[in-house]
Image (cartoon, rainbow, N blue to C red; front, side, top):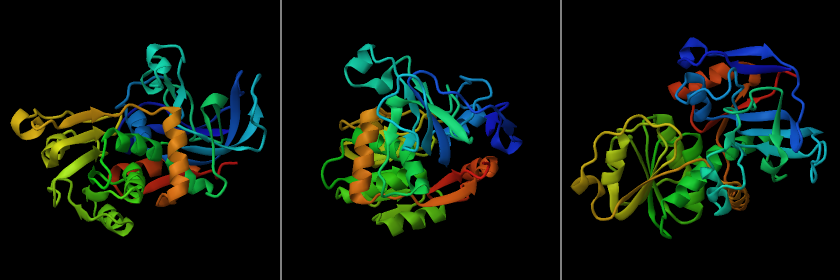
Amino acid sequence: MRAWTVWQPAPVEEDPLRLVERPVPVPGPGELLVHVRACGVCRTDLHVAEGDLPVRREGVTPGHEVVGVVAGLGAGVEGFAEGDRVGVAWLRHTDGTCAYCLRGAENLCPRSEYTGWDADGGYAEYTTVPADFAYRLPGSVDDVSLAPLLCAGIIGYRALRRTSLPPGGRLGLYGFGGSAHLCAQLALAESATVHVLTRGAAARRLARALGAASARDAYDAPPEPLDGAILFAPVGDLVPLALRALDRGGVLSVAGIHLSDVPPLHYESDLFYEKELRSVTSNTRADGREFLVLATLHGVRATTHTYPLSQALQALKDLKAGRFDGAAVLVNDLS
């Protein structure tokens, strides 16, 4: 099969990915072999390609928003059959025995492993996934629309819950890419007032089209104090601005796995009045299952731009440059 590999982490403009020939992987015990039909392009893939995240697997194949069909079963797999449609997401393995797993916080497991970082992911014709970490997908939604839900959607959902937004609350979204535009739809469906602060004119137009009450530049102030905010842009400079935009008792959650350095915070102007700053670390499988149910119930849909899998590198370049709104999705043209 053909697959993309991060041959040497570097700025994406320097072409750190190469398209190579590899054997079709063999599913191990408890694993599924998945024929990839669509794979979302996530900002985390960019961090892996550029070396913002340390190398965990030499020559890894990125991609962790995978929609595909089961093409083979490893020993001991039950409950799946060849031809089943499944989703493969970021979280790939936890030990199930540590204190974090036992208290329902498997996203904090010290021995967790991740698709497209620790193991080869979906920028390929085939990938594997432990059956316990595969998602069953709603049949009413097409492959391309589903793919971004499997990381962008799930992480946005966890970030939204981390804000402890009250019913009918005022939510600020800093950055408005693949994850934020899905989060906004769910928040609006749950009666929040959403204010978007982002650099791109196309993203601001999309925000207003989806129902945001306002859409301004990332460094502008929202038109009213916020009960909660989510920082999706990997820009540490925005943390103090977002904290200052919060009303008393408001919460800012940082959704990204990578963030540039945060400048010094001033207690009186940034954190006083019981404001909170929270990070978001991966997700639990329960988060994923809950979000997929809610996304189906409320009709949450990704605005997508498709690229053939053979143009994965270009999709990453366009993501970095902000050339599209919503989310990019690779479709398999290599078979």
